[in-house]
Length: 260
Image 1 (spheres, rainbow, N blue to C red):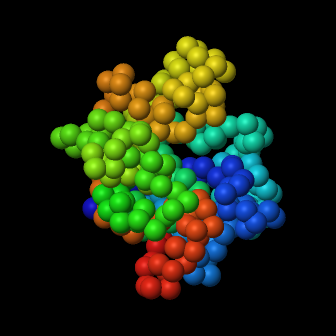
Image 2 (cartoon, one colour):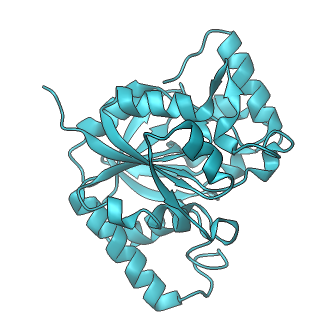
Image 3 (cartoon, rainbow, N blue to C red):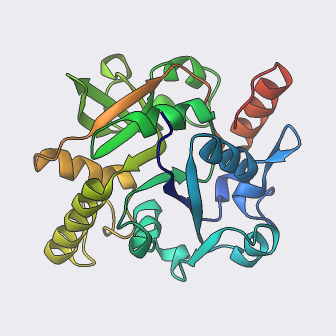
């Protein structure tokens, strides 16, 4: 059965300060692994899983990305230096109506993870890596306490937070999620409700909702009774947040691991 195409939204506005000096003159997603940019690995994985067209929320050096990838649908987060992942994602609100797949821009993963995501019937589904602890063992600059970990029950995510004890976590949210039209409406309604309640004041430990991570709003939605499903992978994913991560991903590629 051929599934209908779903729009993709890549969240890539930030500078990637922890990857300096690699990001001094280039967007973080231009960092190369195995001779291909992170962005190219992501585009290959999304398109291979049936995601199209693809929008890119940019900020830092957006014109460099636009110049190299004119086929993407660009959204400019002009406040990129004062926002985080959640604020950048919501810049693409007008592209969400019919449903979408979102992806962080500093990760590499395989198209089979996207294909599994597309088969989920749930309004909101996250990709979760259950082999995450092995990947964290050599990451001294990015400890398990930084992981966006989840607990689950009966196919649903019960909690998503960095402070979940590693031994209690089912896995780590890799930064790729699908929202059907219903799920997108739930996300936007939750955003509107929390913006109205908190304004530009603190939100769940972040300076403001716009400067929060995506998982903060997802956790709020879980607490408000909105079900969030998960599809699991066992590895095949890397986050490139630090120079050490970059080296580890390069070593994995040299050893034969592939993404896209």
